Length: 225
Image (cartoon, rainbow, N blue to C red; front, side, top):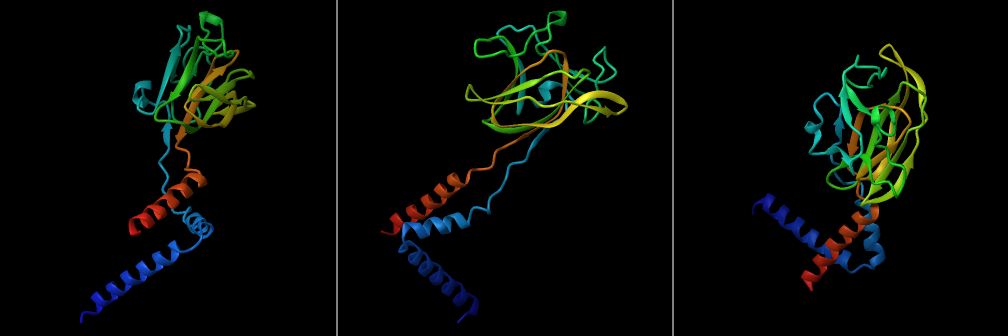
């Protein structure tokens, strides 16, 4: 008799016996077993937007748009450019944002629930975790508003610190973070820059993974009955 065949058969019997034993346990033990499997999962790769190409290049992951006819625009800037006086934190270019600054008729910042004219960053494919670097020629207040499904879920106002970036002194905050959002709006008093925008998919929650694991076990149990 072939040894490998016997070994495979015996392993099959052992697995079947093991599953039968598991299904005879209480639900509490099934939960413990399913929870022990949580570390074994894969993670989606992050999307890094470095603003080294046109904005349409990133349109499968993120869009930059104007809502309600706001007098606003987004512009990829490669210094030196105009009087912005700022340098990006990654590569040779960055995103310039006019935001709420009223100079030159630009006003696209979001000021509250009644404001329907604003610029926004929309993340495609559901809620994401986002980090970005933000910088300005002045020590201004810039607030970012994170939305999910049209509802405001977080407000982040980073502290800008005077920093020398590639020979240019500017006010900078690195890795500003908004979690679980599908849209970002902002409010500010002067033009500012964004660079190194990193979009990540949130990891599945322990509860959702546990539910999936238990569902598989109970479906297997019903098929045997």
